[in-house]
Length: 301
Image (cartoon, rainbow, N blue to C red; front, side):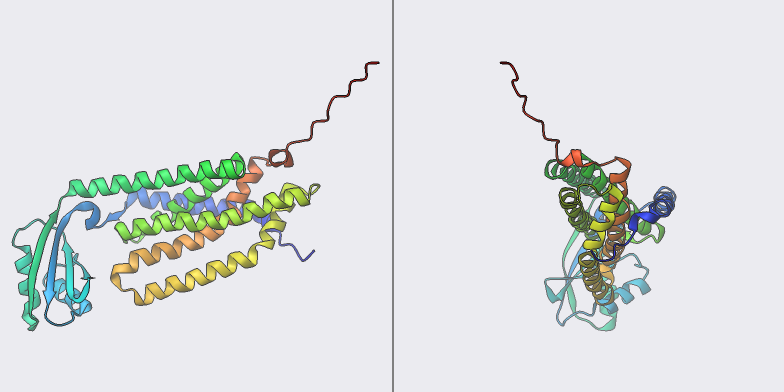
């Protein structure tokens, strides 16, 4: 057998690191809180139509110079159509924004002005949180049915850790939390779960092959066997996310940074959280392979 890396030899140190990082993340969430975007807090959405393709960076700079620093500027369909979202419910806000942008000589018109109330934002936030909880609950049921309930607990703890740490980073740096970031969190759950299941599946297979091997040795062997796959998947995913960070612009920054943090902590948790939970719960061969019950022999004459 090839050299086996003793991942679980430093599990106590990894647990201490996990505990510290998780406490810092929870502290950031409690003290600073999430910086909810207009999708959740409400505001005004203004649709603009330019005669020429719009320069989004210049539009953001113009609005920031006019005192609208919180404005979110995005393309909408064609390159000549722009959506501006900002706090406030002033009915004349659309005309004011158009006047600011026309000062540079750009020709544009206001197509539509809509106000999204905070009640709608609260509903989006509550439904998003409920959707995340339902996803976690469904994952637990699937793993309990597909593997065994101890695997389900390990995956659940790992996924909760990933979400908490990612939210903690967003809260610490006050990165805007909008619907794209919520989508990133759901993607992180799926990515981390896939990584964890790959390791779990190998652990289960090795229980059948290496019957006399201890649980810790089994986990070390299984994690080593899947390490190349884990590293290849994580590195290729991170390269794509870095491209989004560099070229995606301000609109995708929160989405990209959430995915970046989530992939890093998801890779870590699939080794040092989900597996450690299996050790704490004392997973045994009997949990996966019930002992064979010998048939009773009738010895009566």
